[in-house]
Image (tube, rainbow, N blue to C red; front, side, top):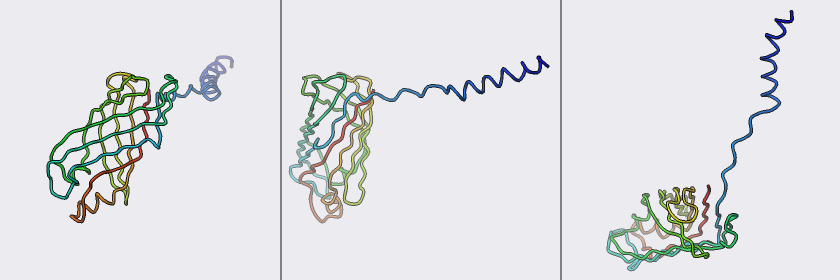
Length: 178
C-alpha cells in the first residue's frame, strides 16, 4: 500500500502546487510616456485640396502635451513639424502607408519614430492610427501608438466634388511603451 500511495501522492502534490501557486503573470508593459489632448495636430494645404490632384504646399505641426513620463520627470511636452509640397487631392488624405518623423521633447531630447499609418473614417470622424517603434533617441526600441482624431465632413464633401480641404485640425493621443 505505501508504494501505491507514493504513486498517487507525487502527481497529486504537483497538481495542488500548481493550483495553489499559479505562475506569476507576465509583467505589464511599461508606459514610457503618454501625451493626451489637448495635444493637437494642424495640417494646412495651399491651395486647398480638391477632388483632382494638384501641386500643393503642406504645413503640418503636432503639439504634444500634457505629457507624463515616469522615467523622465521633466518631460511634459513635445512637438514635430513638417513642411513640404507634392501632388495631392482630398483622396490622398484617406491613404494608409508608412512614415518616419522626429518628436522634439521640451527637454531638448528627440525620439525618431517609424510607423505604419492606418486611415479610417467613421461617420463624420477621421481617425488616423500610427503604430510602430522608436528607432533612435529617447525611448529607442519602445512601441508607439498615436491616434489622431478630427472631423471628416470637409474630406467627405471634397471626395464627392462638393468642396475643398484647406486644413485639418485634430486631437492627438500618444503612447510610447517599453
